[in-house]
Length: 173
Image 1 (tube, helix red, strand yellow):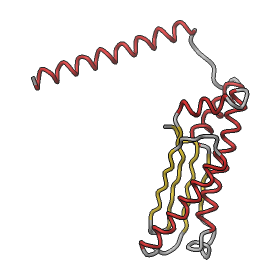
Image 2 (cartoon, rainbow, N blue to C red):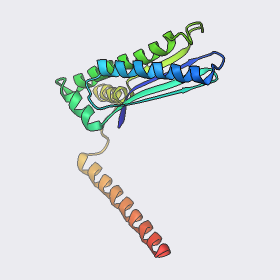
Image 3 (spheres, one colour):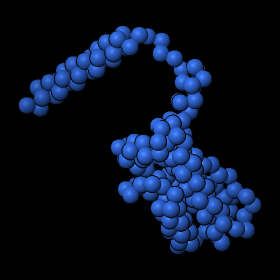
């Protein structure tokens, strides 16, 4: 799975009772699920939410299968256009998570907290496209040389793995 939504929040407030914190986390998780269903074009996704006490700290993310992300990106026409669209959708879900967390009655009285939102791996992918477009990333070696060195690296790793397995088998068997 690959993260397409990341949101975090911190509210400086005294630690609430455990049952209040659990209820708070459930309310945010429900709103997170609603936002993911509303904004994202995926039928199959995973939700993760962690809420900690002390100051109330939370981290939420939505993950999708790489194959599903690939097909969803392709459904929007061009690859770059698809990445941009998924990024905007992921950011909308992240903003919904932070909004749900900050508008809840448990933290409404607290001064504005610290929040961060992004579209996870899709943001990183878009950043790579921008670097390639702006010629900040260029291929330094010819493709054939790159493939030869990559194949050699994989071959060396497999040989080391085979040797380690052989040593373990000799030790236990």
